[in-house]
Image 1 (cartoon, rainbow, N blue to C red):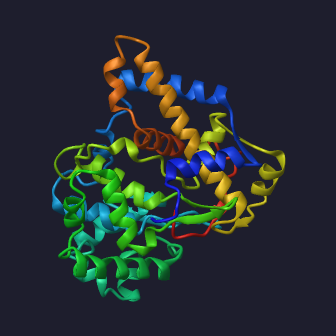
Image 2: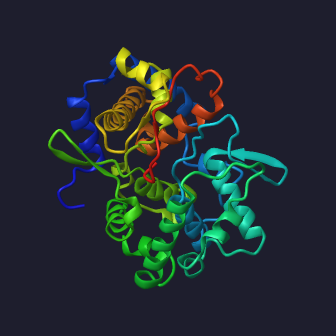
Length: 341
């Protein structure tokens, strides 16, 4: 986007000017060393994406259109109450982002063409509420905003890309950067920017995760082949910062930590929120760089270094955050109702 710093430049700029969030170099080194062991064991790999039970198992156009719909709807899953938005699918209960995936798959099983752009371009609120019906009385947050995002995205696909996101992928010609710019140009709900210290910064969480998920879904081949996938950074949300604090990579001032413990609702684009997301982004860049350095320092692991990128760092941290959720309860996450993450 014209006049907006890209995610990597934004992260660095925000980290250099942040007052309440900082990076602990020792924590970066320790996390990178841990990830190096995961690389050696095969746990840190592009192949993990398709192993998630709810993710598509194919690498075709239908899978890419599934990825697009999930990205359009991928925001704001945290809840104010102890009763979480929950969907049971194939006898298993899912919350958070996975409740979204369960809802999409359940709709497809029921014959609802939720991944078809002509269908969701004109979808009404009652239909979307039916798709997102929960096991309890809770409703998925921002349901009206989700409907608008779907309607807008569906209309763009029909008008500009012959009804399928696959055609946007093909137009990008195997360039992750180009695909990111196409997404930002045509799909307004992905335009995740803020003003910070006199600069227009772009985090582009959902736009980048869309590129990353196409890459992961196709394991870097076919529709998911990008010669510049390393240009994509981590996806600045509200959960990865939490685990970066847990791993002692991020440091919050006492004032900020006290504020977060009150469950104060932050506004999208306010200084504190931008610092948390931006410094998290830059921290993951440093972790990735250190991880590559560790792998390159040993002849037996050097071969793996070219496969490492910030997407895989993010994937690993996000999965691990869910696995360690109980251990991390004492670390507050920042609360912000936003369509951008």
